[in-house]
Image 1 (cartoon, chains in turn orange, purple):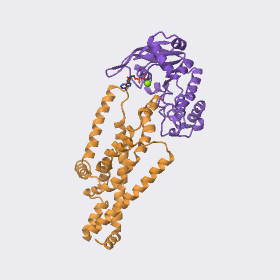
Image 2 (image 1 turned 90 degrees about the vertical axis):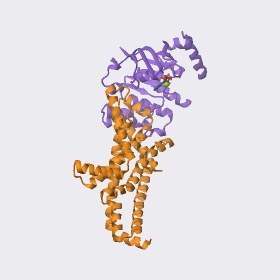
Image 3 (image 1 turned 45 degrees about the vertical axis):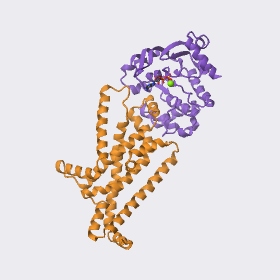
Length: 255
Length: 245
Ligand SMILES: Nc1ncnc2c1ncn2[C@@H]1O[C@H](COP(=O)(O)OP(=O)(O)O)[C@@H](O)[C@H]1O
Ligand SMILES: [Mg+2]
């Protein structure tokens, strides 16, 4: 492998690589954002304990909802995203609507990330001492108001490292979405390698680009985290909280 | 009209009977101190009044409403304030916000009004100077005073205290008790679970002694402390009063 050649490929195919980078970032960022949204809703619902004064019907509904959400989480964490991508893409394409591949890609990565985020958010919520919940309720706040203005902000803050980690994971794992031929970085690299026949050099460039993207994100996320801790030095992060959160994230499972 | 009327209340956790046929009333403006060994069911009783727990039997009427027939639990809860042993301040909000968030969400007060009311209450507990501080930077005594102000901001008609000074270092107990004493002087209706016997004797209109889920004895502080009728009351008092010295 020659570095000279790597550089040549990078320069020569820069527009293709840039398109790949753009698509990868678009998919990874929107997947993380929508995933977080899904995670907040699903994790929030999972963490709510029905009031002791709630009616029997409400309690039963919550039980059923819990089972459905649990199935969603297990299915999407228990199957490869590559399989999810082809299956969902073709399922919708041939039965419902001829959707565009980019939409499909963002849809798939979002619900996949949502399954992980739900667990991150849930354990983040459960790490918040239940006394604050009772205090809010004793002031007359509803369970939704309590969740939204007291519990969730703290859960998100505590879980920020794990949430940020999902972005890094998505930058890398969006590569499997090449299976439905969107122009993300891996797909572009395959075409470049197919044209140049310099497989080693091309994929070396690809790896370096991924490393650059994840490294930069890492630095930015770390900066935001420090900034957050600086403005409010208030939330003690216990070791147990942290490990339970990172266990729920993709990164924690891989290792 | 009795503010709180508890009749034949029973409550268990699984096989454990925690409240066993409890009856008592609290009149408007009265300060009632609930004393008794730990595990006797004092917290559970307070939590039932606030609907953090549900009774298994009997009735609780508060502010002329039967709690089992409430349609709006949240509207009820805001009229009955609760102060906890562990303070339970909102860690993500500063002192002022701790006192305004429920006013704005529940009472729909605008920010300006909520802050004015919060500052009046914080002033009262001597914490207005800390309005921008976050809970983690406060001492236990300061946190508890903020928690009391936070409850007062909702204009409660009744205040429930569950061992408000038990988690405090000894030197901070006084500042919190003084705030409660002042509320008692203003004829706030209060039920206070406490192990501070000198305080109870001083501030209570009535003492209720609980033992293993039942009320063994109740009466004026003088009656309970100086002439307890029940032997177990006497035993309990001699134990805790010994420890006080
Ligand atoms: N949520 C609960 N689940 C099971 N047991 C409980 C619960 N809350 C309290 N208890 C039990 O009920 C008894 C009375 O508790 P509590 O009301 O906290 O007493 P006190 O406040 O007088 O110390 C204790 O034995 C306690 O272990
Ligand atoms: Mg207790």
